[in-house]
Image 1 (cartoon, one colour):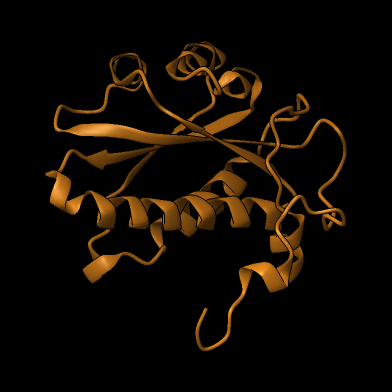
Image 2 (cartoon, one colour; image 1 turned 135 degrees about the horizontal axis):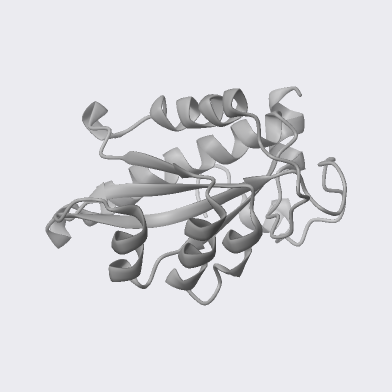
Length: 170
């Protein structure tokens, strides 16, 4: 896919086919996250790739909106350091960049993604075994969309361009 096609085709996918994601595709997606920009080249993230069905089913319990994780062929858990509140904004910005980089890389491969928050950190830690002093920021489910291939989204549920974009000033 071309970059623009990947960006316009990317949508939240929460139902996946049973097709496994190729290990080389997962590595490419993870590499996109690793290469993401971060403040002062800080790179505060670690990624845990999960493909084991038992782990995926357990991970779906970390948040009420994470049900899609249970049936995804693969999930990336984004792990970050626990920091003082004064550094949280920068951390969240960097984690967001890594998240969208991986989601666009997946779309480029024709794979759908869905993201989920993590409310139950104790459950996430018990399933993923990440160390103390870290937390699971979010999960990205990855797989072939059950409803067919990704194509550019025609009917966007977005505010109109001219309502969102201002030039020079508000």
